[in-house]
Image (cartoon, rainbow, N blue to C red; front, side, top):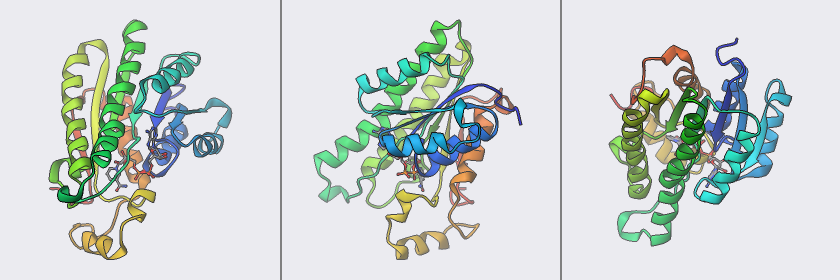
Length: 247
Ligand code: NAD
């Protein structure tokens, strides 16, 4: 399909879990994907395994570091101007509020929230500098940003922050050909959730109307919609993909 024919898509956190599925889905629909991830080995392997592998590339990048993001934007500039940016890099460092260390708080804010700022600013600049080149930004937030979750005050704060960022940026950039939307996944099978105790996961599934966790591909398909012209009149939206957990 040529839904995204030849468009450049940058996927942060694109080497694992949801981001990897997003890289694969966007590539399947014709995008030229830049897999940007802290884990350079997994990023390179992910890019190499995409269909039409010569169209894609990987770049080792720490989204929480402004200089590292500058390096990413220079790499992408050598390819062209991106049409799609997916901010998917994210981490958890769970602890109850009473036990949370400053480092757990700071590191999650830096990656999940400040990272979205650095990367979005870099690629919005690239669009505006190229005659308001159309850009669709998709931020991977979480239903936890809206509902909260035991042990995740830091993570929930970043994911709620990403929702506010998304809506403000959508208002600022609508007249510059930039759409900004967020996807709020529920509980999805990835290395991040595999780290949770099975008893906790079983308990969570009981509360999901569809009775199961989601697949990374099911998030990727929602991102595909927001990345493509199928969503041409959608900006500032938050799309909940939770198997009914969040209605
Ligand atoms: P994952 O751990 O499988 O993948 C995260 C990727 O981000 C990894 O490849 C990692 O190397 C990369 N990364 C981490 N820190 C980075 C940094 N500083 N710079 C660049 N890359 C970095 O996790 P996942 O479950 O696929 O989560 C992906 C996104 O989806 C995250 O933002 C997460 O918060 C969000 N999310 C996940 C779930 C879920 O149930 N798995 C639910 C809601 C939201």
